[in-house]
Image (tube, rainbow over all chains, first blue to last red; front, side):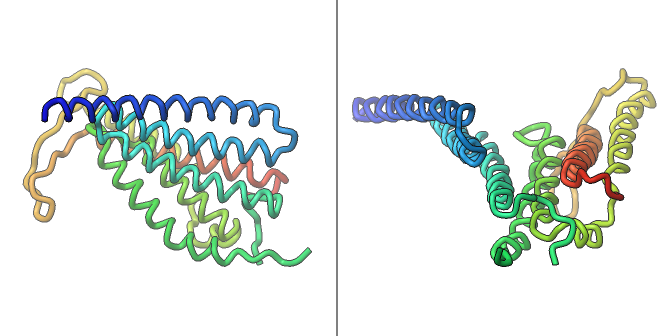
Length: 103
Length: 145
């Protein structure tokens, strides 16, 4: 019984480490797209996805460190990303983010 | 070009802005012991304001929130400095803080800390600075503000 517990714990640890490596690699590839990206929408979408990967990294590190203190941080990054996505969509569609007169 | 339709954005903003304001108040009161505090609470509040500005435009938000955010900055700074100076009354060094437990009617046993007052100053300052920066960048025509 003890041995099974040990195996599952190390399994979680190794899985989390592998996931962190994958997400970090994708962040590096996205950084290339954000810097090089041919057009501005490419850069904006790349920055958006970097934020999503940041959320994933925070969650994975919370699993690795066995703590619940990161939950607020994850929610916070999610909310700021939502604002960013709305602003990005509005910029791509209208070219202006805060208008003077809507109607 | 056809007229754009943003009814989904407007409808969700009415809900999400209140969720954001509630979360910012939670973060504000969670500070100085847990993740949270005045800075990130103010950032959340200004995120809610920016979302409302994006959904409803500048003119109508001036009617709903008739606040000149430039005057919020000195108010917050004065509160923060006043809590620091207040420690002189008790013969303590500048910015020293204390806390105590009180029995409040609804909340039960509550921890009240003077760091919360300092956080209030930080909160107002962050709201003022963030909103001033974003609104100044948003209308760059040199129009009246």
